[in-house]
Image 1 (cartoon, helix red, strand yellow):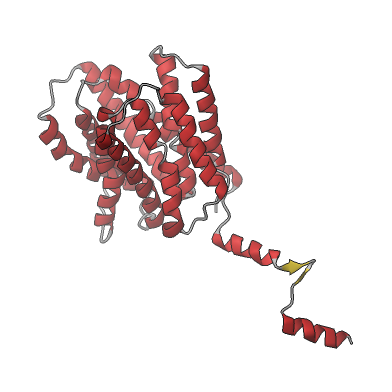
Image 2 (spheres, rainbow, N blue to C red):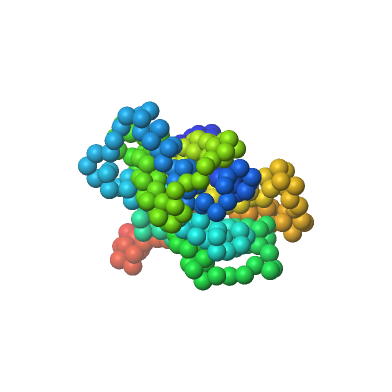
Length: 321
């Protein structure tokens, strides 16, 4: 059980992950070769995963071979592929709005898989988060593509499922979040590699700026960010962690304004405020099922004493006679 300070510290550190992910768009646009999204995903995940494997010198055992593969697919491999399909077939704003439904999906999965209680407040916060992100990134001229929309929704579902399953399975005894991050990045990168080669062909000749961009994405944007993310999943409720994902499009918009000279309108600033409020509201603790039952039990009391059944009440009246 974390102290209040410990919970706030874990929350702040975990929030650094989606803030870092928000820089992906600017780095991709300014430093990476065009039309190579799957290569970018592969070089984000695989080198970082292999370095972490070499540094930690721990391999999965038993059930954790397939669990690491599943988590690597949901959080990295399949998620990156779907994310890039959505990004290529949809305007960036539409893709971001579809990704913003992740907290709602995670909240829904957390009920049967984790026993977390999702109240009306969390649902309203999730809807407000989608609205806030839409105000920040959506444009009236945006056009929808069925395949792109389905890919965006599936990507959000993958990340939500990966977050909840990572919370449910935890970590093997003696294994830290850095080791688990290495397993998932390696598994996800190995899944992406053949797809990238098949779809995009051999990688082009890379410039120094390309290598700088890929290096940043692999180290800060992926290895460090996912380590913080998985560490947060182990310490915080899954729904709380999922709500932090709303910070990513806000970070992207802020970096675009500060570094790329993009404008921010009053409506976008309002959307940022709504999304931030939704993120904060999503951090308020939800009562556990045991707490909810205890509250229901208190609601059945009369005054300061429990209500009596008809038989007990009749016996009480006879004893006072």
